[in-house]
Length: 265
Image (tube, rainbow, N blue to C red; front, side, top):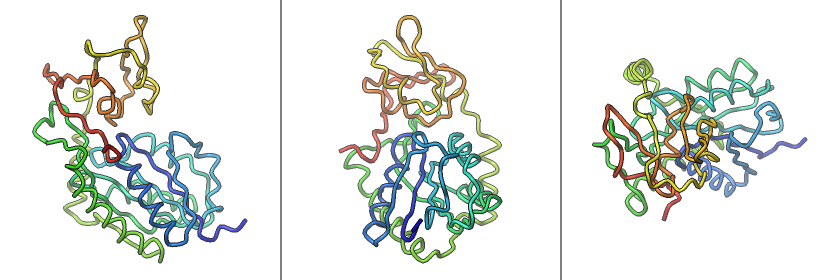
């Protein structure tokens, strides 16, 4: 099979930031003559992927306290063995991506892949829960400047991807120290203590779109939340009635601004 110019990007996105980065990367590579596909890992079986069909593979995910989201971790574990397929990895973060892209994708080299680029793209903040209430959430025109900076970063990465030029961002003692501190201190159990308020209309959007099937209807057709939340804040951010709230040390998130994603007008 001719794989010349074929690139497949596999991404996980909670609120849309990483999806936007994947789509922008695909768009710009297509303009350079490549044939690029983007796939949400929620809609594809990793074990059915044939890595040697592609000239390159891209891996993209958001950073959660210097870790990769559990669905992406599982996806990477299930990827079939390759025969030298190059891999570029991009981690999306608000202020700090650290060495996360490297730490979670370099291990693919053990299965025959050749990871060569590990980068971070800074995107708008998407978390506005009680412990982070001091961090402003912006939407629409307010995030244009941030997206423009992200797009310029993507353009710089494109030139490296085209030439298979190695890059390892976040490889410093300070980044590694910060990564380790965040991973040890990560505890989101209280932060994502979700419940629905009286604004819930039982539309089922959260039930249908939870990436870990953590939300189910009770007998009254009201969403209840299990113990498998990964803090992607998708349901919290995108509920059409903003009916999903979080309790943090008895403080409700009612009234907090929700992030609508880079695709919002």
